[in-house]
Length: 418
Image (cartoon, rainbow, N blue to C red; front, side):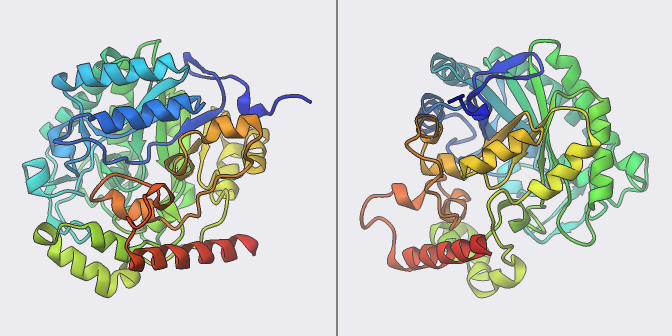
């Protein structure tokens, strides 16, 4: 019996992965004061030990103005020793180390980023909520250079791969989307103009990556709402990235400030979200989530491999390597994705549930993740660390949150049977 394609090596740019599994850049919230912690080290080391081909450290900002959480990494010189310790440990386990870099744009507060939040167009951001500042040309230039410096810093920290976040409504995505980009200069208006910032960032990143680092870009296939980018424009963005020579694309969808569940699918666990929020800092958001969250963030039904049909249309239109993400919990779906021409696939929640999932797949112990997609881990991620409710001690999960989890998992089970 031949080994599953999942566990065969694959090439992404200049690097070779031992298998085709990648831990996706799901935000861990395991940094403190924007610095790496022992918890972050232990988590990614455990994922590497658990058989992953490459693990991605999530959501590292290229500059202070791009920070959206205290638990988010900020790429600066003093972070190098701890990051190098982490990448060395990942390499010792036979895995490659990747890091997602980006800038949050308007999705932050002055208290976090220590300035009026930057955005392509100065508008009020209801999601934060906060007033934002339209970036000047000098600030655009500064941000482009910050992406380049981040690549050099990540190389010195021992990373093999950089994932540039150009989706989900963060800064590059904000420039791309007509919903957030209302500029009247050469960075706004036509799609050609709206791609200008992305083009400059990626060109700078590729220059700094030279020939020894893999560069992948996470990019939307749709923003997920009527006034955002639709599939036709998103495909043109992907084709532009192909021309720019990036080594692979991670195909995703959704806009955190407008259509967050298009990214994650299922229901947002509002009771969980509110339970872990700091009442003193976010009383208004906590109250709003409990009273009207379901109207602001409607449920998007979950199903396994939920981006597959959309991703296949991009696969047909592009020649470059593509990495699949979205609902990868079943071995047969993983093999289907690879047989359809994707070089590798990413998983997030399956590895929050069990860091040893890949090894168990390979040994035959499991063929499916035990993740129930209640999104409990997402609900607590914004305040404390990302953690699966099934990994908690008995009695640690409050009864009302346990009921919310049970209800959500039953809805997912029902949706998957359709």
